[in-house]
Length: 199
Length: 199
View (cartoon, rainbow over the protein chains, first blue to last red):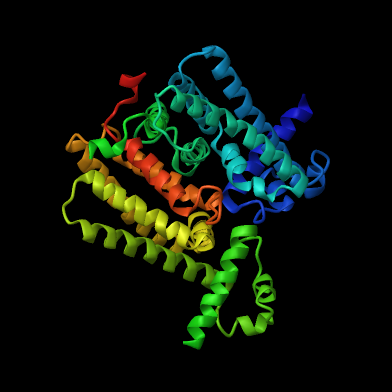
């Protein structure tokens, strides 16, 4: 339990440093200094900087997966639009719950070792597939406008991930109004109303 | 002229390295090695790694600004939707024209020195303001659905910038079909059809 708490603390501090200076721009010594301990003491808890990054990425990936599973499980076979909305809401929920960690997951996974990077890519692809599937079903059902589901899913997820760049829980708009707006923009982006008709 | 060509070559190589390994993860020696010259020779052309980053960011910012100006100049006082479409198309045009450079501009500007970072942030803000203004006008005109223009502009630009992560000119969908889809998704995201009505 104490070990778990210490690891979590190390990951929190490392997330902030990786976010601020990048993985390459952060040393184990920087992490130790931010925790006010010796580098050698840090190695009692983690094998390497790479190990810390991997823990952060692995755990964050699991959070995204669990949130999406829960969102879809609640909905059964609801309409594609309701399911896409639930997926988008679950996604931004994980992003804003811990911006530092989400930011590392989104931007620093490239610094993983090749084998871990490959595993993470596979997981990201499977996660993104849920969005593609729902978008495809919505297009078939006529709810969403025809578009390549892979392109649309990539577009939406990048846009939603963009929250990490500027989201502040105590910002001008309040937390739920920002996340609601992001979900709304995403739903509209794939929705049926062809922009050409309205122009 | 020769000097300009050499600088451009250095920036091209540095862009690829910064993109692949990040600014912090790239040394002047890496840049020199990729150009097959000595580090000392590189310093005949550039003052520092920071100087190379600044050239790339500064020039890319100018390209985005010039493309947006040209797009709007062509349109005069056209409808907000036509102007937003032109802005989005101009933006993705600059992104896909040189993915390496755009990627550095989008992801590595944080590694600029504080003063240059502040100047870049001011320019980015002024650039983004054009999107906010057109979105606001479209909302007033009733073409776009009510939404905070600052949030919507941030959403759209992050989504469009996301092309740098996966765009391949020779990919499955072909260049213009991907960029067209990105512009279309952006226009729809802010368009009038409220998703709730359709669900």
